[in-house]
Image 1 (cartoon, one colour):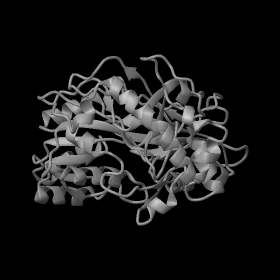
Image 2: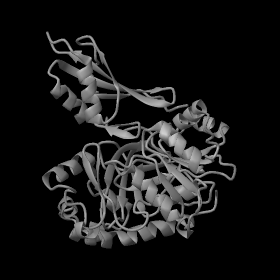
Image 3: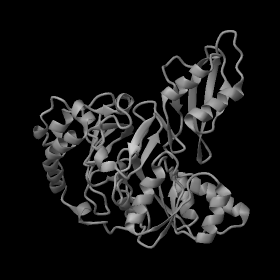
Length: 417
């Protein structure tokens, strides 16, 4: 598993840095010419002068709320895409909502490196349990696996029994999906009397791979690594492993990305090792995003990976810099909770609490009643499912009992073990 995908991964770090920032000014000029939203956002900036990290850090951080505002004013992409280059492609809707384009060509989200680092090779059959509906998750990994030379079964989400039946027949060696759904499949296969020992490798994302769950998979003969991906950039970083499958610390940043860690709420880079918001600049000419704040927390690990890859390592996903929270592989935004309250005048205040139920994410909406208005929980639960596209419980809280701390979403999952 230590063999690199290509020579780019093994470059001297100084060479990589010189290459990225030598290319950046020309990229910014061309991208601004083809993406009027980006040109508007960077108006007044001397693009030719953006030749190192200090100069890049002087540019504003584009946060997703601002990108959503651009898109609302100029749908679908807010002027941040080269529409001429996207003809024949796909468009997706991520929660927020945000419209995301798929670039043309093989592996537009650069996920093949993550598959390769996980030990997956051409000819492997991949069971892809990411969603192919509306959001780009399924396609992000599908495109990379096929670019690597794998055969992909587009299983999608849900329909556990059908997925177990399909995997028992097709005998894929690779599972790809959220971290906890593989356990759902393996447990259900045991109940159905089906053999899924074909799974030997896994590449997971869109949620935390807890150490206990990784250890359980190893005990069942499946080596599972994870990657960190977003709809805007595809795979940003990925895990690597020793020959025996033991994961190395942190995640290696993908090629052709500039990653910064900034102090939340600012655009100021923090010292190495300090936790902050992950900000990314890509060299995607079709969807050029410069200093986009992901809203995710991470930190840079010192030194190089033992695998030999030389790019920066980050600790991976360490929570949210804002309250927008990933649950079951999907984001829940405070605006969505506000919409539930708006729909139900009998609700005075609401707080979504996210926890772990065994090895799965679970969410519960705590609602306070408005004065003199009893709450029927079932309609609120239906709104929660419709607006977030996920199921969750609704419980009644006493009037005035929810904390007065401004939190709409409380992530109470323990990521320490």
